[in-house]
Picture 1: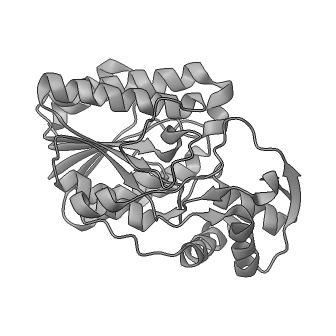
Picture 2: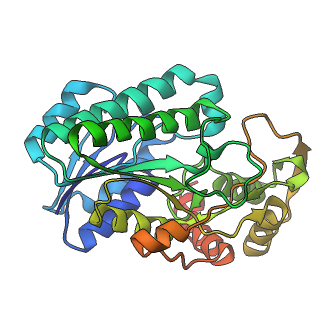
Picture 3: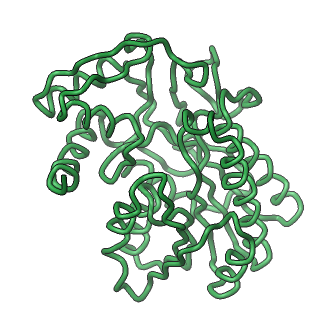
Length: 319
């Protein structure tokens, strides 16, 4: 199968690329290697694939329509994994126009190019943040997502809605996968596991919201990739599906696990949580089990141990 992966040099995109190439697929990767975090880190992510004849890398910005159209016309992919986006709830608060341009306009460019070349299946990386502040726990796909707390989840909501329009107008199979707190090797430096680890090894204060009285449903990258691959292989019409572990962890416990793994003691700077941060993320994954055969395997302790090993080998060694 020929699969186009946006954000192909990123944390999740490069992990998906590896899985697809390993099973014999052809991957067309799109990435603009922006400087939101180190472009060198992203180039290291794709370096192992560059000599693979089934790997095609296009360094373009998908918020620009013409380059996107050209890549789709050249490769005629069978499926799309649209993972590329501006991430981070907190960064979006100060940069709403950037998120609208990249996440909304860029996604429409990818959707429109996909339907015009007859793509069979479109898988979109949405987010658990789309649920906002809710008392309905765990989060289930049928509950409202009309009240996002920041531009980032609002932009993801917009693309889910646009995906339904393309399904309705063109019969495009569109699956929105709502990722819950993805972490693991190659994780982004703006994500909590990386930040906490870096603060621990540098003996710097860790900013902790509400004294750690927040819970997150940490989901290991290999489990997420298994769900994405399953969604690529299963055209489902139009669906929204949670991909999480289903076991939220208190932030205090999360930090304690990293303290044990690294052998370092945390210095905590407790502050109130901003309005953009939900108190909990907690996935009901029964729909994913039923439709995708999804079955997350990796505990937070095991996953953070694997992240720490990657960090030691690839971040501390290069420092």
